[in-house]
Length: 139
Image (cartoon, rainbow, N blue to C red; front, side, top):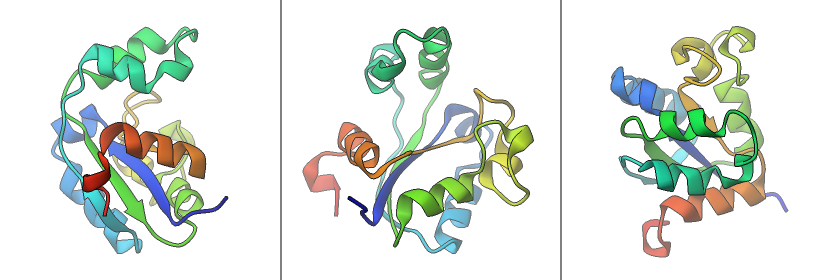
């Protein structure tokens, strides 16, 4: 099922370095409409709940520590073909492999500190959006 919504979050490194505004500008200039946005600071436990699918992976502890290290900016975005178009806009997980002009090429420091998250499917976009935003917060 293809939808016109996706989920993203600006990660702690990009927020701490003051890149949130620039990243949001790029997102909006790419034709995405922000339908929900807030700034939150995850606890390690809450980060663990979000990344529970990776619980058995060797990088899980580092990931949850990193994601609870500072504020993040979660958002629900809307646009036709939202998931695929947004994945293209943010670029490869490894910023060294990301195409020029992508968000990760411009703002990421490493595979872990890669500035931004983007849902990988319509189903995950819904799950991730619901994790951060209550029904009344989703317009």
